[in-house]
Length: 470
Image 1 (cartoon, helix red, strand yellow):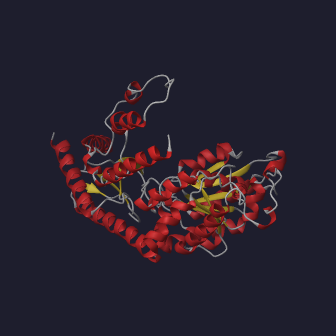
Image 2 (cartoon, helix red, strand yellow):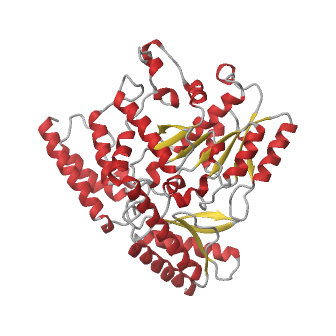
Image 3 (cartoon, rainbow, N blue to C red):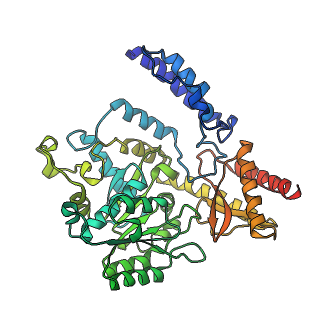
């Protein structure tokens, strides 16, 4: 494609994206295709000769678009958000156009120095301790794996990198912890048998006294406690593990403390929400995802560490072909995580922060919290419905509970979710809280307004009434 053709198609694509976002409500929230349907419409073999962009774009619109779930739709309430913004999209376009590789300072000085600056901005915006330093990872799963590996190395005085684990290390997380923790212990050498699942309280937050009991029991058995993961905003219910007592326990026993705030960390941009970070001075590492609730396109995960030296010692490798003359004087972020190659993710985040400003981001978060509280109050006031977990952020857990047995209630809630998702108007997911099938509604899209939430509640009520009366 020559430059003029690129220019013409780029204008066409930007117009399409703007129209898509402006008119996104004309699409059903969730795709209605069946498994295999999209692939059946595509050629089994690649073309021998290149095809015109007009034909490729037409296939995108006619074949692929009907198979998309529309995450930016104001009725998309299913998972924690992956919201974008025009500012972030523009930054992403520039990043793609530059085609830079940001693995070291020398390969892209601006990418390295902007990332360093933007991470310091984020640290201050959230009110995190001044000693933490940050690096952008792709996802919180990767950041958590980096924390598990760094904790492993610190616990073994960096010997396991050389000779492997000589004795088992133990990790600790609550019953409500994200699945990435289990995956992380599988692939970082701890092993699932050495992951201790700590009970949660009635609000689904970790019980610190049970954590200390588990640590003491493992010490008595000759095992080595290495890392504990506190979750600030669990996926199932939005529960917040109490960071301060957990941190005090970890400090007492020399255990690495990692906090997973992938979704809810953005809430701390508002000072009134910083109660979730009470005890942050005990953190060894912390992660939150601007690509969830900070209007920045996926992927962009902000990972902070108290001791960058431990992180670097865990990951650094210095083959001759990567050495440069400036290495002693600069940050090479390839040594701050698993991948060698790195995208210029800081650019889109910089665009978002500069365009919205702190006040704009605070207003965005506060409006989502207002809408979530509004929905929570409607549900709580409706006979036959209940809110089984605190709604700290944009997630509201709710269920129909009209007094029948639990088996019947679960059946009705499943049917309610399935009918709502099939309607095309909204999308929901479920979880199980206290053994009960529970629905989740998340206020997440940049485009969601009060009228959308009100319409969702009216649809939920009407659909539930239809099921119950049948």
